[in-house]
Structures are given as structure tokens and as C-alpha cells.
Image (cartoon, rainbow, N blue to C red; front, side):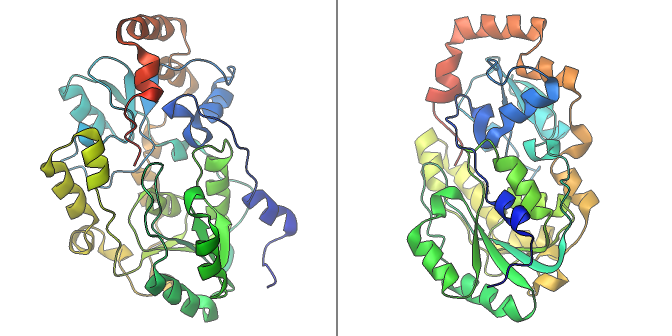
Length: 329
């Protein structure tokens, strides 16, 4: 198959820089990116956690929705994507501010979107939960789109980049791509560069990639039936009640999504929604922090470093930041 991208661009979209995360903030290379913005060493200790996933529901948002380590009020600063989410956490006694999602800090790359190219994001696994991502109905749908697009690529979360999945994708004439990888310092940039290269995005599951695609100016659509990932493993692991499970099932359900995101729920990817202003709002771009405020939030200035050190001594912070219960499902 002849690729519609220059070889050097295609190579860049597959480039990985594996590393071993130390903090939750490290995931997908975010701490290293922040250190570059703030002109500090990449190995500086951090005293905060940052909400890295898009929660597309504000109504009913609570601390149980925060995708980070299980922490208790006052132990570390938490950065959320929106002021409303920060307010909810502050009402629960947490030290929280709004600062946008990590993706909002990745500038547009030099690549331009190739017209009539389709990038698909199937439902994916998580660090502790392996989902059945080979949805034959969705892959068959993507294969049918080959006549409408110059190329159809499938972005796979690193845990799903396995022989069985690759075989099912390639046998349909689709092209697999390495997608998000929490242990890759190049992951956030690669995600942005990939979205900057494709004109259209399709998915069969709601998640952060929807917000990223819209923010990058892609025409975005959600395939039906929508895959609802089971929230019970995460809830059981963290000891969350049935109310959390019911809420997560509701906000993933096709009925709820059609009521709240009807413009995305279309059968043809070419008829999807293209609204970068809306997407930038979803990723919290209006709330991104300037370098001095990033230093204060993360613990890279004198005052916040001292406060973080005191909290660390009191609450055994390293265990909570990484070795505690990871909420990143």
C-alpha cells in the first residue's frame, strides 16, 4: 500500500521514546513536556497530580471520577481541566486548581491535515484492565470506508498493539498505528502530530480522544453501537460504590451520548462534527497555566516546593503518588 504521507512524517508518527514513569504526572511524557516549558530539569520532584483524561460530564462530577492516584484532602495539589471540576474537589477539601488537560499544552505541529484521510480510535485497554478491543463490526465498518478515503488508519493503545489485533486490522486493508503509551515520553506529541496529519477521526467509544480530535480541527464522528467499557473492575479495585458504576455506565450509554452529543453521533465519518473551538474548550485550553503558575502548581518554585516537602514528610507522598492505588483505568 502506498502511504499518502512523506516517509519522514510517517516515521515521526511512529517514533517512541520509552521510559519508566516515576510519578503519575510522568504518564505519556507530560512531566518532561512541562519541564521544557518551565526550563527546569526533567528529573525534578513533583508535588501535584494532573487530571489527564477528559470527563465529558460536569453534572455529577466527583472525586471518584478523578483518574489519578487515590489521595486524601490536603495531601497534594490537583490540577483539573475546568474550574467547575476544581470547585467540586475544593468543596471536598482538596487543594485543586484548573489548568486544562495535558493535551492542551501540546502546540500544533508543522504537519497539515491530509484531505480525505481517516484515523480510527477503537475502544482500548487500560494499564490494569485488558478490554476486548477487536470489535469486528467496527473494523468491518472501517473497511467499508476505504472507498471514501485515501487511507484508513487505526490508532492502537500500546497494550492493544498485539499480533491478533494487528492481523484483524491488516486483513481488512487497514493500517495500524502505535497510539497512546503512558511509558513513552513522546506519546503526547505523537498523538497531536497524528491528529494534525488526518482530516477525519472515527471512534466506537467515547473518551479523551474525541476531545483531542475536535481540538485539532478533525471532522469527528462516533460509530454506533457505542462500546460501553465496564466500570466495575476499577470501582472494585478502589472500593467505589454502586453509584459510581451506575454513573459511568450512564455517561457511556448511547442514549445519553445522543442526548448530549448528537452532532457527533452520525453514521458517516464524512458528516461528523468539525469544531476546533468546541474541542479546545473540552481540553481546557482557556485555562492553561503560564510557566510561573505551572511551577507553583507542580512544586517547582521555592514556596510550593517547601509546602510539598512538608506534606510529603507528613503523608508519605511517594507511596501515594505512585505505589498507592492507581485510579488510571
